[in-house]
Image 1 (cartoon, helix red, strand yellow):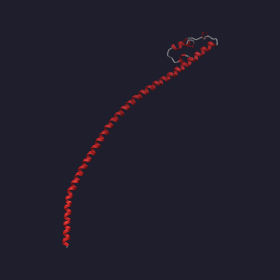
Image 2 (cartoon, rainbow, N blue to C red; image 1 turned 60 degrees about the horizontal axis):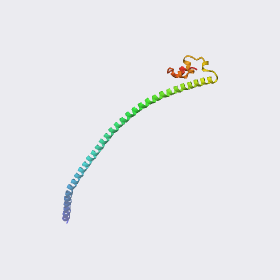
Image 3 (spheres, helix red, strand yellow; image 1 turned 120 degrees about the horizontal axis):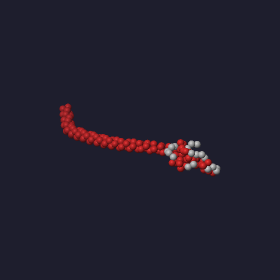
Image 4 (cartoon, helix red, strand yellow; image 1 turned 90 degrees about the horizontal axis):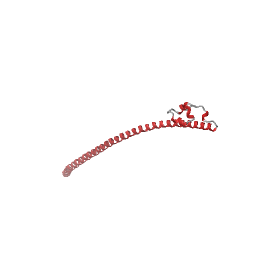
Amino acid sequence: MATSSGTSSGSSLLRNSSSSEDLDPKLDQRKRKRMISNRESARRSRMRKQKHLDELTAQLSQLRNENNEIMSKINVTTQLYNGVEAENSILRAQLSELSHRLDSLNEILSFVNQSNIDGFGAEDYQIGGEYDCFVNLRSCFNASNQPMMDMVMY
């Protein structure tokens, strides 16, 4: 009996080994297909990554160009602003000087008018030379472009 159980178990081993031999080529073929598929998938993934990297590089270049253009425009605008600001400062100084001149002329005019009201005529004052503008304001305006303080002395 020992022989029969040994033969049966031996034939069973033979059958198992022959079926595993049949499965090995199928498994090897599946492994190869999977390896090929994985390689192809990895190649496509690398290609997508490279394409994405190329797109990002192009976008970076475009954004740098736009940034340079914007910076140039900002520099030009800043220079124009500084020019306008300097001109504005000059105009403010001129406004201040002209306002001071106007105040002085109004004060002179008020003094002349007050003198005429009080009964004194302008001819009663001995005025001469550059101070004639007390009597004739038109001569003050036609005077040289000297500051008012040089033309009028209190």
